[in-house]
Length: 135
Image 1: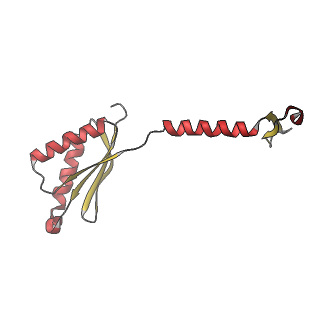
Image 2 (image 1 turned 135 degrees about the vertical axis):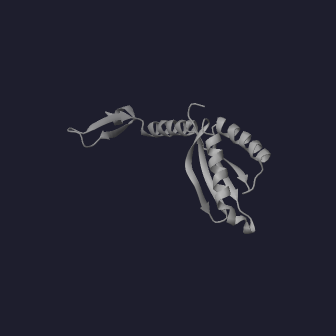
Image 3 (image 1 turned 180 degrees about the horizontal axis):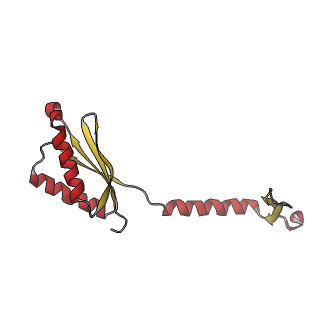
């Protein structure tokens, strides 16, 4: 029947009893399947990660300024990577850096949730904040 119509006989479900087959244009089927996957991929949201850098002794004004930027990033739906960069001997102020990041997390609580608590990696203490879905 498939040859008469100039189409392909495609086995849909080989494990069924009896096996299920369908007469269709296989190339067209593959093309449409690829097209559907492309549309789904386009709809998938891409994760944007924005960074904010602090020093261990960041002043209050600078902190507020950077906090406003962090709020904007989270409102726009981007993930936030906040980190304290320790230069030279400032590594002795690890506690200050951690306090600074935790304060930021507390201030941004209504805009996002902490994905990763502050963690020291080399000369950086890094914390990730993901935006809340409702915003």
